[in-house]
Length: 406
Ligand SMILES: Cc1ncc(COP(=O)(O)O)c(C=O)c1O
Image (cartoon, rainbow, N blue to C red; front, side, top):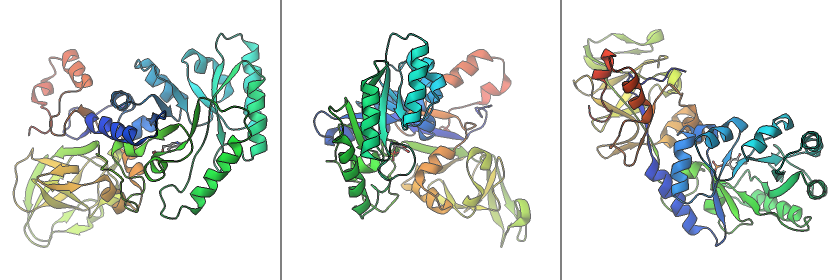
């Protein structure tokens, strides 16, 4: 996919915030516990490799992903820590799992039997690291009874081509005030653990919500996802036990500013008509970037002033009502802080009727991610430097300037 480096729309990712969120969580964790950073789905849209590096600086001991390809991406970027794939991988890919030293989730007996056949066919030097997944009430993947878990553990123990590295479950209501179902899931997980003659290296139950609101729970590893990016897993339902630092800022700048007479239509379908003489600005971001049409009527910040998105959001552009004339090139903050005003990912999620996770994952690869140590102190990313070195005669390159310096 072509990335829009020649357009001023940027996702600025504050790696210090990611590092700080990991450090803060680690300080609260029981002695002997470790934190695995969940960087699936391109690090919830923040960039998997850069997030993993920041999390590692903050003390993450390993990483969780959803796809084999995501694990390989981390390995190819030089990440050597343990990586666990949280979902099911076809046993046909066991050679890749072993080659890259990646641990995998076991969710059914059938998978184990097939994997054992695969491992028997070729002689590998290393056993395959597996984590047993117990379905304690999420209803997604995993063994559904203590007996099934016991049999899986025995199967693994009796087959030297496997190594039982972990056992885990996933809680579906850890972000709710009412902990009844959460407690049931925890109790079920303990029943499953009781079936094992010895516990593996990693026993894990905690995602962000469990880690934040049930910190003393069973296990010695946490799978820290959304909170690492500075987002509250409950939205606004539960207070953060310590301030999470949001890592993502979305900015752009005005590409056209015009004053329209009363009665002028804006956007497809003419869903907005000017009431009076109005200053209208156009921003180069649209639904193809993940800035979705339902955000019509939401506000963005220009010089700290909230400006309403008017008319339908187009594929690549959208229009806002400005309080007065401002120059083309003026910075627009779509998510983040500007002159004391803040638009959060949660506010965007609420406008869209969804959760902050989904907003973060929806930003398309078309928007360049730039990694900053401090918001506002944007520096060229490697890709831009490479592009400028590769195409030094490209006339537009002279005009490209770091965002935030408009
Ligand atoms: C099995 C599993 N563990 C951990 C996580 C991380 O969850 P969170 O982002 O809420 O911390 C996820 C995310 O979907 C998951 O599926």
